[in-house]
Image 1: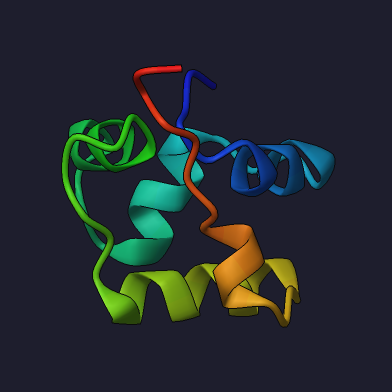
Image 2 (image 1 turned 30 degrees about the vertical axis):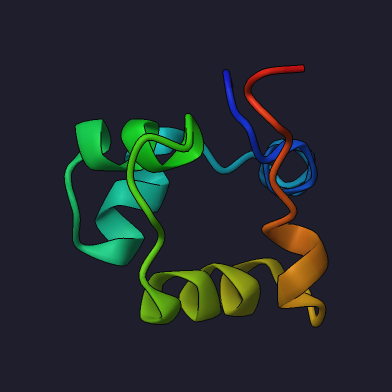
Length: 71
């Protein structure tokens, strides 16, 4: 996954969650998921909390740590 959220993508990849699965789980489109992963649109808090629950990941701040696109 091309993303500005490397920790999130690593954790998703670890358990085999792809964009399609995430879109269904969050009840949004695949395009929306891709846009959010690229940092083009913001994550809703409810989406972030759902992802943390899916991944069984407690540290929401770490999971959604964003890389600077200008690096």
